[in-house]
Figure 1: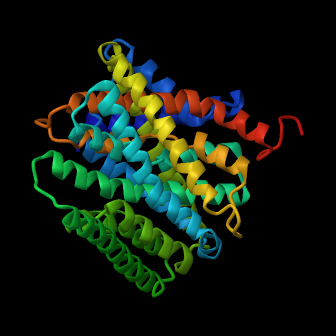
Figure 2 (figure 1 turned 180 degrees about the vertical axis):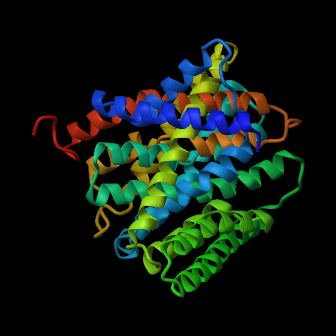
Length: 391
């Protein structure tokens, strides 16, 4: 590892710490503050530069965030709302991807392959953005569970759907039956990988009284499950979520050292992701792609509404009923972020329409961070989900 890279990483973490202090005082979303800081850094003379790549986002910074979020999900609470969560995570992703693809094809004129690839990668509500926003707002209770769990699970399903769409875009001939088998195999294989790694970590951690060893096992489980699943052409996202759920519910989750480690790992990864997004947003112009960017943002909002409201209506007369206020929060809280960019940046350079997909993905993420991120807390106050200021 180059000394220059280490110095730059330490500099970015210092900036992140200062931004965290300022945003708390100004009562601004931390993620929004980081993106603004990143854009400011990019405009400086001799601005620092770290390439925003698929490997950095997807393989390095995403696993600890997925693992940390899943680690704190309790199965007893998750089980009660699992029908709603899985419906939003699977059917919701399919609806969102389809509506977005239709919009990009008929309004912007994209080829179907590019439209479907974009629809799949942008369909997931990114846990990095969602969890940061809702935790800062202090959201508690069922809404917190629905938002956090759905963002995690639909992350996995969107990544699986994206892999299939990207394969078709690359020229592979995939029948409908083969496509279903690939999806089922990727999801099932990911759960098996994550389950095997998670249970092995639980077994090994239970044989040690050394908290440093236990922390090491959880770290190996977070990245190891992700890399193992990806190596076997399964979903690394779902594998890490599975490992996190197992260790969080069966492992030594009450150890203070483990909690402290993962809280800091999530803070560091979140900070670097949003600073880098800001730096690259500043250097990427949307002037020549304003129509695609505008339609992409509108399509993402419409597709989110088309998924949340009709699917929530399915549970209207059951014990799993989703209230209107929760539906509104789920709709506007469907932020996009690191996962969408990681998937877009991972597309082959030779793919037709790749640059347009990446540009529109950046535009949608920018809208999520600024428009949705800045208005999410006021909306939650208006809906009565968090106390009004001064109470």
